[in-house]
Amino acid sequence: MLLFGLCSFTVNSFAQSDTATIATFQKIFGTTQFKVDTTAVPEDSLTQKIRLLRKVRGPLNMDIVIKNFIQGQEENDKTHPKEYFDRLLEECQNGNAHRLIENVLINLYKQCFTEQELDQLLLFYKSSAGQKMSKDFMLLSFTGATAAQRIIKTTAGNLDQEMRAEGKIK
Image 1 (cartoon, one colour):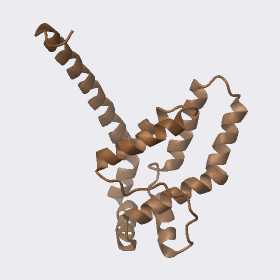
Image 2 (image 1 turned 120 degrees about the vertical axis):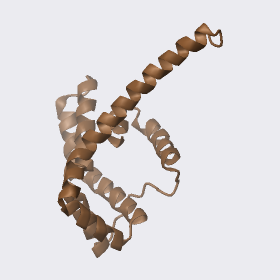
Image 3 (image 1 turned 180 degrees about the horizontal axis):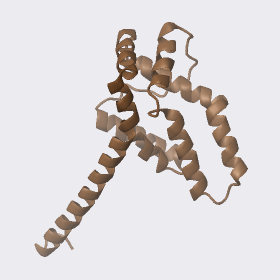
């Protein structure tokens, strides 16, 4: 789902959409507790466990989401040269933007998980079931979300026809 949200924005409209996206996720997940926090993270055992967890989770990571997002922007934006997107990707993978994104993610994990919970997650993601979950999660999410969107669109079309026939909408 995060991948869909990120890939649907353009570089120029991202700031406007960001607020709406956060509000949508807060509504879906029933919380307003998560705040975007780019402050530097301490080099403590909790931070190290979060970094390790993000690493062992394999393909389910923000680096792939960011790369796909930027590649999507490059395909849709004919006003900027390739060098612009190459430099943007480099900054997001190795520069200050990378550091800020990593700080946000680590701070979010710290808001959400205790050290004991991180230990349990690490055990799970190092297991064969955890590795399979990492490998297949994005495919499962993408396929499920795509199917749901198609079903909703078809259902909405059918409902539209029914209500037009009933004279309840024009």
